[in-house]
Image (cartoon, rainbow, N blue to C red; front, side):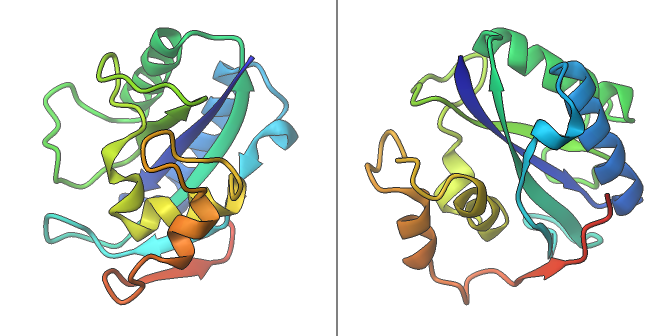
Length: 165
């Protein structure tokens, strides 16, 4: 069994796509919705482009699937919810699912693990610190609670919003 953590984001019909993304994750990983570890829901400004604010969160799941299978399922969920194959990196998203961690695996393909943006973006680190506070970053060798406590919170504006599920 592997513990995985997935970042979910949306800035297009945010509530709808967060709800749909969570349901799709539960269905794809064959779990009751209640077995998903959910962070708070956060609102953050768009990073890297001018656009509507995002809703972001992190989901923890325990799975028997390989990292390749997980990456494929996440990509399929994105495509099934309006993501196009030629979507630009910094652009509006109906649903953006990024595999952040797969146990303590360190790889570059089929996904960069641990994901480089974990300790760079508040919208990833804060929710990850909620669902995996004592998990240790496999490269930095500090837990996510400590990384969040040491993060420059003036760097990016982020706020908790009411959950929509």
